[in-house]
Length: 514
Image 1 (cartoon, helix red, strand yellow):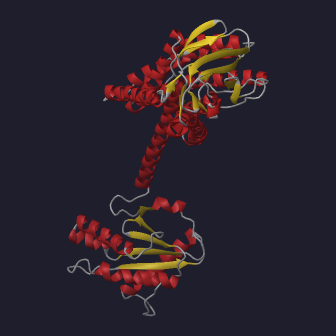
Image 2 (spheres, helix red, strand yellow):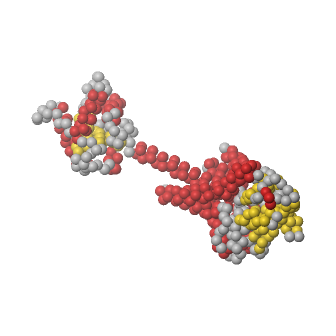
Image 3 (spheres, helix red, strand yellow):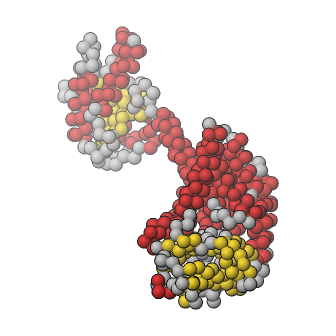
């Protein structure tokens, strides 16, 4: 079963990878191959890091086509202008404030077909703060044939993270309040709550934006979201250890490296140094998700393996992309979503199961095991109002029944009484085994007269339970005071007046109803 969960995690990543490859395939006339960058010829896809911010120009020549929509699936830059035969056909971001976040989106532009000539030049002007690149070949197509795919690509590349961020915030709040309800598991729930919240902040880096404030603000924004991502991986590791093995193991060592590497982010003075630092830090801190996988695998908790393995593979894939400069897409955002939210859902389910078990335990604690009625401990939680009524009932000659018929038969008599009473009570009323053969019945918002009528209706079904023995019970009804002790004493006095009447000892010879 453990290896099956690992296999499911692997297959989920493979399915995601296939879906992305299928969705991102070229659907039209490809503009890949050779492009011009100044005097240099380059091949798309490509990616470069630059030491100084500036504008980069890329050109592609192509012959006349019928298609009038340009699709640029993935481009790295922080502002972009697109020209066709020296005519501006689209702009993303602002060159004056080059803080757009468009690397994870799909850009599409429809243009006037009259712009096309026998020989055409497509020019991309990119503002590179620290990097630029075209990770997938652009292509020309007709808008009507690709509008559905463009919508899907924007959903899976960018829009889905809006949903994930919202879920992260909500789930972190839920886990925070759950941690207050379970002090013995507070550390576990708090770690995962922090991890989920920070993961949501980190996912802001995957959002399509045309501007992120000034360049100075954008630099600090990048530092904060990356730092949140690093701390989130540590919190997930520590939370996994506390959840599975109930102690800190790897995390008590990795915390120092995580804190040191995270702190180093804030000492980077520009985008270029931050980019170089983050590439190195990613390799160093990949140990947190790797150790999370190890912790989940060696524990007996199998339910964590699927999200943990899935996230681990996305991290490994991202590291391979960085090391070998592959033009592949990062899936680590999906890994964070699946792990953080998957872990949160598991904890919420655990809390629900714990709550159900506590309710069952509580119900057993306040329930009489023989009759199924409440036991007298529930009286501590009952709050009565003046319009409520209380009945104290006692089975007549119960000792004689036990002596002549046996205790097993006597137990049956108690159960018959409980059954007869329940058939005449409302769902909100309470039946309590007060002790031995005595029972307390509490009827909310019910007058003494109505209560007496209900108790008299119970006589017939109960008395008819056994033809060989004349079964009966006495009762007393009290109401109006709202004070439990006073009402019990009053009901007890009236019950014994009824017993005296049934024994022929009543002075006035009148049956004392209530």
